[in-house]
Length: 301
Image (cartoon, rainbow, N blue to C red; front, side, top):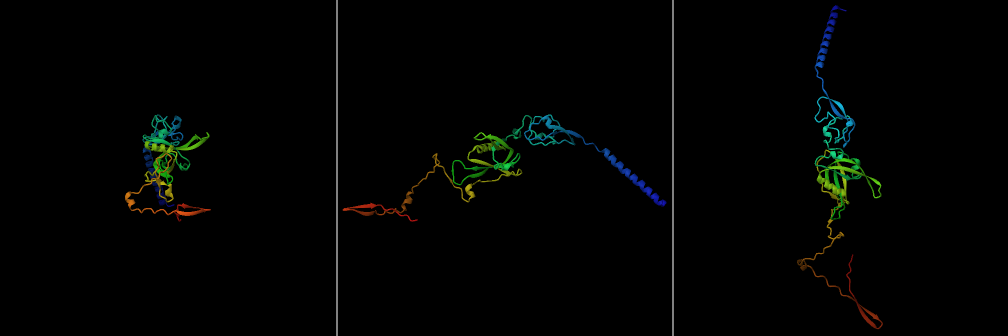
């Protein structure tokens, strides 16, 4: 090999080695200057905690959190024991103070009711409960159907939306007994309502001729729909007709016959005279007699 080429190769190797070493020193210096991120112990759920569960010591565990702890994140078990769970906390999830009821608030359904609101249980069936799709956190409208009291309804049953955008707290089953003493499963839905809405649901829930239907809606749709209700006769194209109830207790409807006014009687034609009677002579041997019969008007169809 030419001596000149050999010198060039040696110089190139030296330069590349020096450049590689320089880059290594720079990267190592930057890595050594990097500060270590601190870690903090936080409280995590040792198992999945359902709504209404009273938190116990073995339900919680400590884990590591790198960086700044978000506000409201629990870092100690103290103050969490004995509080009720407001929304489900999954296993391994960091426990937020806002996910638990205030101290002394207890657990169960009562802990999930905000201030000023009420929880009302209504009985439904599989159809009225939207075939099982009504669950905690969903929003529903309530439609009332039946016969309005105090009137003779000639248009059939009526239906009207009485409450809208009602939150469901829980949906489950309640066991009752029938007339023979046998256990019967009754689906029950607990709704979050205001005190005024609770009074409306109390009347509907205890009414004999009224039934409710839960209508599932999008939780993000909070707009109130303007409805006027409908009647069974409207579905067949007939306008509703409502008759007033008589004062008697047997629900009879009185027929009032009004006499024409005097000025109307002046222009009325007098009734035609009655037709003459029919005379028939009857001979019985030597005796002769006559019988008269009143004529009747024949009405042609």
